[in-house]
Length: 86
Length: 280
Image (cartoon, rainbow over all chains, first blue to last red; front, top):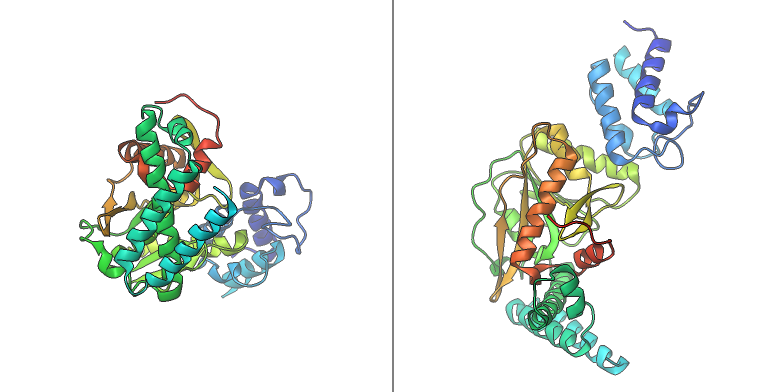
């Protein structure tokens, strides 16, 4: 099983592959939003990112992440980490 | 047209909208007549020149008749939308004739802002399977098996709706959404000698799920509305979004060339705002 830092790096790699603005940043802080006001990912890119997480980590697609609060880097990483620990 | 005339036309249209819940056939017919007359008197939006800019093969008299008809179409659609907001689909159901051809899900039905776009609701209720319809803003509450979700909101909200549509198609159901409304970045494709920006969402859904897209339109005919379903759009070997979008625009172009009076004002405005591009 992957260790948490490895998971985090894998999630960030996925993020960089889907969000051009993420590639230009040296760091992706936890509170950085994925959508508007942050990495500017549009609706299709956000869903494709969640599909990537589902496929790469073998976890159920984190549907609930799109509901409620703005999706941030930290929320996505924490969710993937928790789902893999289950 | 002066302010008093505009006021009179607006007042008559409001009256027809209230009457539409009791006598929809007559009220909608009256709205079409009112819209035609208004356009004929004002010779504005669309003007015959606007129509000819898009359909240059029409002679001036034919273009004028198309402009009147578009004026009538818009007035009828405005009255219907107002009636739907007040009364729901009940007054409209008896006016939508015929059954849809046999359609097998998973299937994405793509609409355009052409013809009797608000009259599609009763036809969707006749589909044999769950239907998720995406719409910008609520208009009415449909009966099962149709559910309408709004695409209003920011990208994250739209992503949640997009994800629902994806799951719906993967679950073997129907999804209905407009192809020609662009909330975010769109796909620019040739249409009627211009460039039309289509929404990327439906084509991305088709790519991700493998579900076919079939065009869906309705037109006012006599006192009612008739629904037409196009053949599945050809996706090309790779199923690329741009290839599907180009096929959708080609279908729309053929439909509107055959029936220019079905061009909705929003569509007309979008097309006329673009530079002329080489026609196919």
